[in-house]
Structures are given as structure tokens and as C-alpha cells.
Amino acid sequence: MKSRPLILIAGGTDPEGPEFKDPSLTLSGRYTEAVLLHGGLPFILAPVPSARAIAESVRRCDAVVLSGGDDLQTSLYAAGLTPEIAAKAGRPDRERDLAESLLIQEVFHQRKPLLAICRGHQMLNVVFGGTLIVDLPSQRPAGLNHRRFDIPDEPGHEIALASGSLIRKLLRRPTAAVNTTHHQAVDRLAPLFRPTATSGDGIIEAFELAPEHAAALPWLLSVQFHPERLCLRQPEFGRIFSGLTRAARADARRRR
Image 1 (spheres, one colour):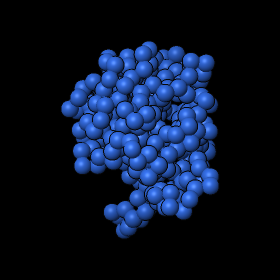
Image 2: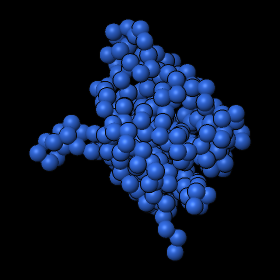
Image 3: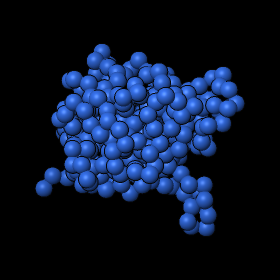
Image 4: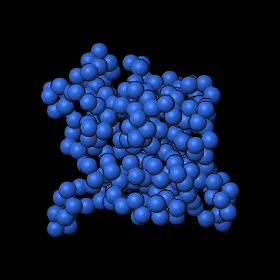
């Protein structure tokens, strides 16, 4: 029996958790469920900004998932915001921002397969010099409604998938219907990446390594939507996690 590759999932924080109201680690069970269902063994990483602990965690795992969560602090990706726009950003978690910045740098240093989801998608872009739209309803008022929290497990709009992209190969179709529960989005994409899926209003819904940077990681997919919430009802989205697991197993064999 093949051993499952160890998939590290970056968790979030709750300032007042259920035990004595202590600050706590938080992560939707959908992530661990999706990883387990598609051949991986999940390992949850608390957002503790210790470079040594993060480096050791990445060294021990076979692949990494950056999960969703609250907004990033605007100082990381936007300058000169009006007070009205700045006020649209959610509560910042500076410790998590720092921890995930260190984690992303370590993943690229050690060259491990990486899947980024929602907040993780945005964080990955920001770490490499990209920017974000702070608030879609305010800054893109003519666009689609991307804040469909009423249907987090159901499609909210369609996306077009780029020919030859990893996401198109995984989903095996030129378009897909995805859930949408965000008010921020990638604005300027970092030069390391290329967009591989867009919504009808032009929002980057997925990106991958640009061809000239393809050797930076053995496998990378970054998505704005939540495949972990879609994969039980729509098995094609499970191929994203199966693809990560296969890449993790192949990379682990190569290292041995």
C-alpha cells in the first residue's frame, strides 16, 4: 500500500477560540476532507511567524496548500488609498500575513508543489510583487457579484480556462462554473505568473507559473474560488487535489 504524501495546509486564527477564549488555530474541515479524499494526508500549520519552524515544516511535507480567510493588510499591496476604500478592507491579521509570507518564500526555496486558494491566491501574488483590488463593489461597480456567501458550495459564475493551462487539463473543459465568496481580487499580477482563468468581468480566477519561470516549482496552481467546497458535488474539482497529490508523490520519489 502506498503511503499518502503529507500535505501541509496553512491555517488561520481566531482571536477568541472556544477554549477559555484563547487565541486559536482555525481551518475549515473542507480542506482536510478534500486532501484526504484525494489521496493526501493533511498536516495543519499554525500561522506562527517562526522562520525556523516554517522551514522545518516545509522540509517534512510533500506539498503545501494556502487556505482562505480574512483580508490581507493593505500596506502590503496598496499605497495612497482613499479613507473610503481603505475602510472596506477587513480586520488585518499581521501575524498570519508574516507567517504565510515566510511560508511562500520557503516553499519556493525548497521547491515543493503548491496549491493556493482564495486568500492564499491573493497572498501568493502579493509576496511576489503583485497588487490587489481592495474592494470589488467599490472599485469595479460594473462587474459581477463576487460576494455570493449565500451559495458557498454552488456555482456563482463561469470562468474561461486558458488553452494549454494546468487548470484546463485538470478540469478537462474550456469553461467552468465556480463558487465566488470574495470582495478582493488580484489586480496587477506578479511577473512570475500568468493568468490561466478569468471571469466574465476580467477578474483573474486562476494563475500559474509563466512559461519562462516554469522551473521555479514542480507544480503550482493558484485559484480565487474554493474547489474544496465544490469537489463533493462536482468531482471534476477534486482533480485539483488529485493533481496536487500526484505531484507531491512524484516529487517525493524524485527527492529520494
